[in-house]
Image (cartoon, rainbow, N blue to C red):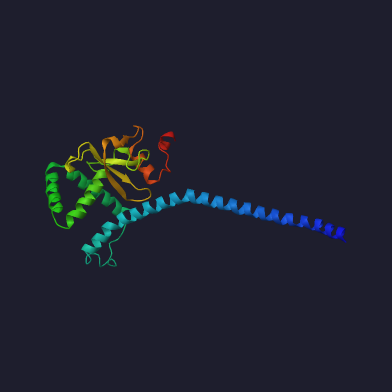
Length: 234
């Protein structure tokens, strides 16, 4: 009887192996599919987000002029369902041309003087000056004649062996009564915020000449995921 029971047990064990083998194969299949899915997301997500941002910006600029005209002259376009006939792309072209014309006019001497007077008027207007000066300084820091984020540096602010990547925005802080100090703006990763430090010159290190300001900004905003110099290698 014992031998029969033992023999029965020995014969029943092999039936478990195909079940386990099938389970493992299904797990490998699901794992492979999941890996392919996330790989597809990694490839498609940046492309999709980029297309969405570009199309949304284009539509916003393209619709801006017709919306302004409809708001200013509602009676004029009442005969056409109350809306100006829209040609896709025309508003975008007109808006870009208008910006270029304003940029050209502002470079002329007499217009530049007028803009300077208007600029001082807005900067002295209570309430308006905070918004106007903040937006103006922000845009000029990136694209104006007073670019600020063009000198990337390493700044030591936490401990002797910890460094942050930032940009010199003021080479002198004498207006604060502090000599041999520099103002450094450190952007946060995956955010539009940052923090400003005033540190001694000895606390900063300049980056190698091959690293541009755009590459440094891309590196810090991406949390260090972007490899510096990879575009040049490509």
